[in-house]
Length: 207
Image (cartoon, rainbow, N blue to C red):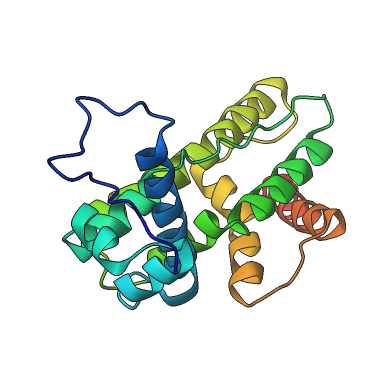
């Protein structure tokens, strides 16, 4: 296992200020990335310092010194990477724009951080701080979808309906398929979801 040179620094060797790109920052990034991988695999309750240290290539004491509290490490691991704001195109073709969003959402959910957030979201024991991180990430992912749908209502591309509800109807199947262990999510999958949801919406309003 690689030596760590103490990510938090010894009193005798510490410099007045470490530059963000220095060794200390790189070690922390490795440990946070390792914690994210393990939360994605095992959930927030089951990952251990020993596993974080082994995956990051540092000593266990380094992990413990930086995060004496197990929950603090999980929280920082989940919040240290910006939640990708998935752009929704406005090409004039609503079906294509929504399908593109669902493909991008599936790609985001398939990353280590995306899997970790999904795992935590399904956990009944997540604390309030962790729950807030998951909710914030979800809201940021959905923000551009909301804006695209609002434009669709304004232009008459869709009959008016609750934006949040429609967004959940479109994105829900993506979460479900990936949670069930679906290895890939294709453009055809996305188009099928969009077609079914939009057909149902139009049918309800036509009736």
